[in-house]
Image (cartoon, rainbow, N blue to C red; front, side, top):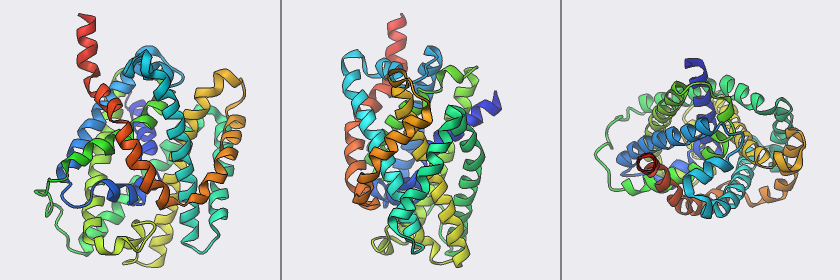
Length: 339
């Protein structure tokens, strides 16, 4: 049970820590100054949402997200949010591909080369169906989390920053709601695809609480570090590089590899949500569906990484507030229905 719970936890964290999050761009977009309470609220709400989504998915033994979505928003809104999820997964996976381009561009490779480097392994991953993604996440996510924590703790130590120097600054607490809402749709899409692979309810608690603690802790440390270099962030497409400039070039290479892994795992999760959604209609192997979807995505990567995050992420954060509210109220409403 513990091993299975950790496996799902890494899937959740891999879905969440993508190009926007690992680079610091997404955190800075929503949080920044006065956000200690916002990050705490995010961690709590994220844990509760994971619990609800996984419970529904487990009870219905789902293989894709549609039955989970119907349980959360009701049959009348399911069609609207189904298309929203498809559009969300499509555009955010485009953001991941663009993020790969931006990462390789930092090392003086062409932007297009950076995009294409992620495409081939992303398609090959789906030869092993859903198991391929779960296996990759279980292997690379511990490395990614350890690497990111190491850099953040090292930076805080070297710059002699106070871990709790900004803990009383709470005026930006409302940012927790659009930030959590932003990350709800991919969770529904990915966790809805694994309901028929969960064996015990204990797995749900381990995965939900574990992912909430990990993401809450990293978010706080990361945001605390970015506050210290707020004047420099505007000069960087990827804020993480503003932290890494204080360290040897080898450190930048290592963390760029970690960033690329984060991009890859989230691109894989987004593609998983899409291919499992259409598998029943098209009756094709997942890798063929993945290849077709990614081919359609490629032209859209030309918009650029930070531009896509700047406009798309806040928009989705607002649109998803209804889903977030429904998830948080679902345990109470479903209990009344049973009675």
